[in-house]
Image (cartoon, rainbow, N blue to C red; front, side, top):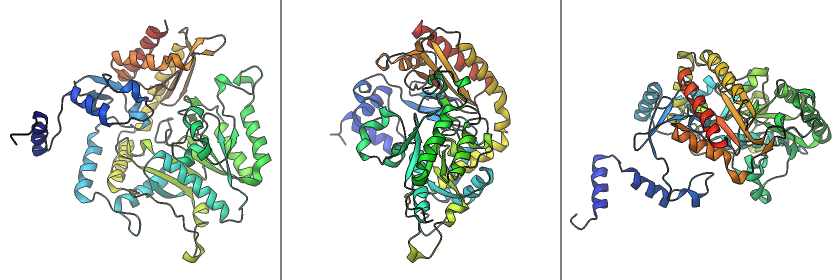
Length: 471
C-alpha cells in the first residue's frame, strides 16, 4: 500500500466504497485516452473541454461540474418521459432483484412475453408477432432478412432485391447500410453492401423532380417515380424499406400527407413487402403512437427501438404479420427456421423498463398532452422563417428541423466545411441547451414530457443562437 501512487490509492478507496467519483479533468483525460466516440473526428475531440454528463433530471442533463443543459435531442431521439423517471427507475430496480438475464434460446421470460403482448396490442392492426433484438440497426436488418427469406420460402426465389430511398438512414450494420441512402455514412463501405434499387425521397424543399422546384404543385412526382420503379422491378423485389413520416438522419425530412399511404398501396399492387423503420418516429414522437397509424397503414414488417424503453436500456423489436410468420412454420428438417438471434434478445431488465414506459403513456395520458406542445412548436418554427438565414422549417409532431442557408432566394446551402450547424449548437450550449445538428440542419427532438415553459426556453435559445452565429 505504501508504494502505491496517490491515484492508485484513490481508486482503491473508491473501489472499497463501491463508488467512482472523479474530478472533471481526470474524467476528460480518461475519455480522451481510452474512448472512441461515434460519428466523431477524434482529432478534434481529444484534449478539448468536453462535457461529461453525470446525472439526469426531467428534461435536463447535468455535467460533473453541476451545469444543467436542456436536452433538445432527447438523448439522441430515445427519451420519452424525461431523465430518471422514478417509476421506470423502480421497475428496473425490482427486476434486477428478480432476474438480470435469461436467454430466449430454449427458454422464455415473463417480461419478454408480457411486453410482446403489449406491443401487439398497440401496434397497427394485423401485426401479430414480435422478434426482439437490441438496437435499431439490428431491428431493420432482421426485417430485411425476414422479407428475403419469406420470398425464398413462398416460391418467389427471384425476389431478392430491395427498394431504398434517397436520404434514408436505417443503421450501421452491413444490411441496414445497404438499404440506406446517405453517402457520407455509407459510400466508403460500398464494396461491402448488397445492391438495391434507389427511389427519390420527398425532400420537398430541395425537390429534384419538379421543374419549378415547388413541391406544392408537383403532385407527388416522387410517388409516381416510385410507381415506375416498382412496375419495372416488381418481379425481383422482395421488399421496400421506409422511414414513415420523417427521414431522420437525412435531415428531418417530412413526407407530404398521403405519401406513406401511397407507398403502402404500391407495395400491395406489386406484391412487395413494406418494411417500416419506426425506430426514431415510434412511441408518440409524431403525435400518434406509431407514424404508420396516422395514415391508417399497417406495414408487413415494422422495426422499433429508441423510445421503446424510454431511452433507458438497449432494446429493439421487429414486428410482423402472421402471414410472414407462417412462411417460417414447418418441420425442423425443412430448414424454414429463422436462423437469427442475439445474446441479449428479450433481456428482462430492458423489457421491464419498456413495460413501465407503456404504463406511463397511460398514467400521464402522454399522447393526449402533446397537441398544445405540437402547436406551440409549429408557431415558433414558422416564426423562425423571418430570420434571414433560415431557409426551411419542417415539423411532424414533436420533431423539428431548421435548415440554414446562405441565401434564401436561391436556397444556397452553407458549405459543409463551414460547420454552421455545429457552430449554432455550440452557441446554444452557452445558453444551457444541448443540441446535435445534422449538417446545416438544427434538430429539435426533446423528451415528449417537456413542459411548455421548457419548450419555450428551448426555442428561445435556438432562435438566439441562430441569430448570433448567422447574423
